[in-house]
Length: 98
Image 1 (tube, one colour):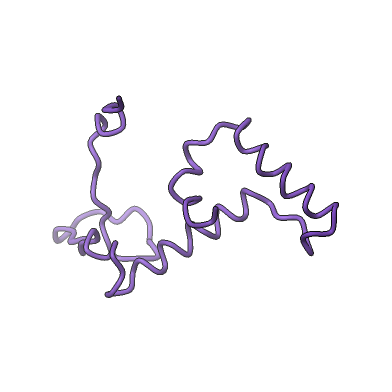
Image 2 (image 1 turned 90 degrees about the horizontal axis):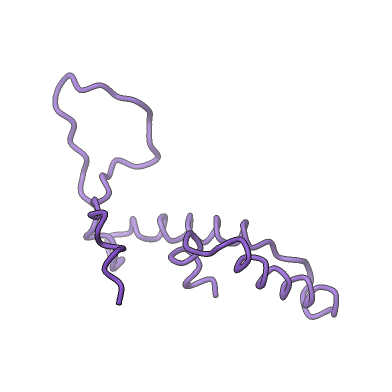
């Protein structure tokens, strides 16, 4: 579940997010888990770990990053934790479903 969570969490509706949360509650109440997991926290940690691990040179997603080169005198709006520019995906990419 944690493997696919960074990709699919943004597409889940609120009703779909409640279902795994109920499973986490039941496992904690029945004694199968030591603590009750929060789906929002798990998703945030999984997304952070995926991004942190993808910065490694031998990660399969590393080739998608390119160094962000701003022209001289360009305005800097805010500092980022990384110096990469993520690739842009066209808007019609998600509309091509069968």
